Image 1 (cartoon, rainbow, N blue to C red):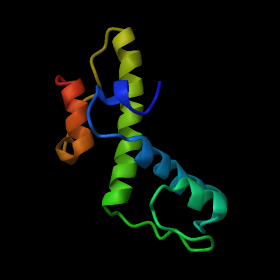
Image 2 (cartoon, rainbow, N blue to C red):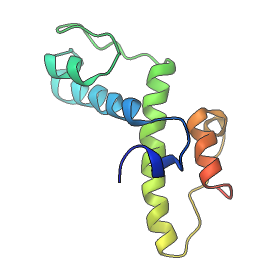
Image 3 (cartoon, rainbow, N blue to C red):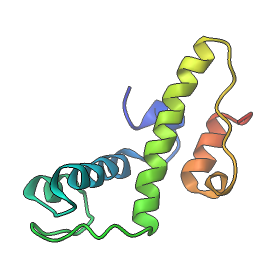
Image 4 (cartoon, helix red, strand yellow):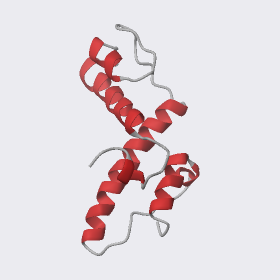
Length: 112
C-alpha cells in the first residue's frame, strides 16, 4: 500500500512528502533531542533545516499537514480493517473536516 493513489482515492493531494516529513520530525526528536542531523536534513523534504540547527517545531501549516497526513493514513489503514469486518469508516469530526486532507477523506468515505 503506497502513500498516493488508492490512499486518497485518486485525490490530487499527495500526502507522501508530508507523511515522510512527519516521521523525520518524530525521529529527530526521539533520537537526537530535536537537533537536525544529516539524516534529518536529507529526509525532511523542503523543511529548510541545516545540520546542527534545532528543529523548532511550531504549529504552522507545514507541521499541520505533516500531522494530518499521519493521522489520516492511519485512519485509512484502520478503515480497510473495519470494512473487512463489516464496520463503517472512522468518523471525522471538527476542524479536520475543513482541511484538504479531511475533504479528500470525506470524498473517499462520505458516510464518515
